[in-house]
Length: 341
Image (tube, rainbow, N blue to C red; front, side, top):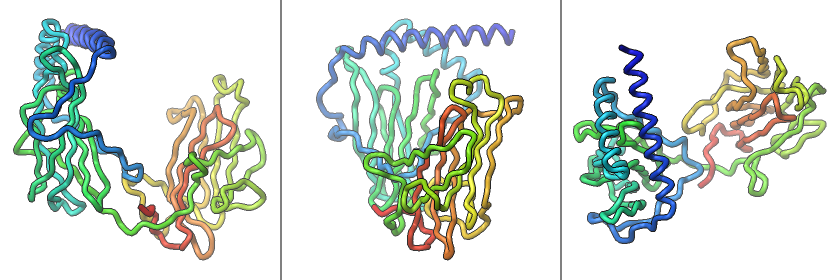
């Protein structure tokens, strides 16, 4: 019985995918709707602040599997009758804006955006602006479409955004007026001019490293490879033509007069005071459960005497002849790593 249910759901999802593909193909030749939403003037989408932390990823409310199955069956049945039903789904949204202390933020700028379809069958993007009240609350009611994007911003804070799907095959997100979705805004601190890996339009520093060779030294302050440098990199990798058949590779990083601490913070703007490890080795064996062909790792770093602090991302793989470094360092010796605005 369980196997039959799984097969049935797989068939349903296949039907939904076919409907989506056919409608999206038709959408390319359609003209957008002009005009304003009824409750506010339509505006252009806001640009994302590149200095903000990772975007908030909304999670739909949990529902029972049986309830989701029933929703999906009903959704598929309506799609069979009307291939554009996806853009006619009812949209309500209830949100709340708070700060790092969970205190409400009033007058935050709210930007909604969603796809909808008009009475002539024309699919378009609709936007609407609002603001949070004194309790940090905001809402959107009685709209139709899917998905809904919500962006929240306030001067002096890092913005947040998320995408909410109302169709059962992608969610569904279930709005609740008594349990609004929370957007936490992080207050901006005093920024500083940091020394970074950026050069021209590129934010990264690509470093060539011998595949089996001697270590190289990277001067992070001067953005160059040479005889001196704070960061030492060594690797053992197969030749490019052999990497798919290779069974082992390694990559080593070292800061002799400092070290590394793993970084996974949403806002990595304050380096730790201690606990730095001077050398880290990544060793991958193909018969091991942790086998990887590529890595992206983030660290806080410390080096020098007196010490300087920064953050560093390293990307490399078994197939590359080197590594890509992205970093920011405070030249003053402060642990503050928040960039100047």
